[in-house]
Image (cartoon, rainbow, N blue to C red):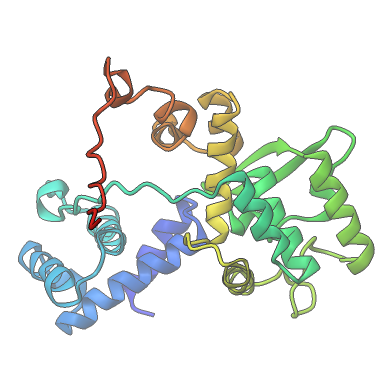
Length: 293
């Protein structure tokens, strides 16, 4: 390990960045250095600009992928190398397109969950929907996180290293109890094939795609789609945005507010001006069939 990599790793550790973030940043800086065959210490704004052009035009990476490289380079040069640049100019971040998720209807959620053959996979994905959990949060649940006395689920160290509580649905509790009696997990609620380890998220994603094919639902479905459905269905049932923000564990209310643009109770409650016209639009009459006698 080079001195610069060691320093950057220590800088991330003392700031308590998530382990996945540390791994991603080191990988991105390594790719940057490999592209120029030089240590980042000897590279500057012109090389950074050339690298971003390469990622955009040759690699054709999505803006979200480029943003990860931008964040890693900003951390390296600002924190570890202590450059006093104007980072918004030297390492500009691409504008990320504003995309809205495709949301399943309640009927589609029922049909999808019913198409999952594995008891364990159905329990995991039902938990994602019933509690609005990220897949990484669901697979790291422990039996002790299910509090049937207070009817809450404790989410320990979710995204952003934050604990939170979410509601425990009576129907979900029944599902989890049935699963627990059948499987009898020990350490983790959803154990994987490796002893003492939680199930791998890729296994859940594969099961999700298999269930989508069996259900014949044309909408794209991932485990995160169930979290989106959780938020939108709560909003449509009258739950306020602030409460949904706390349940989802969003840091910013603006992140949660995007669901206002999807919920039918907000978007479709306004009448179209077409329906407010005083008279209906005339429909061209069908031509009468020709008479030959």
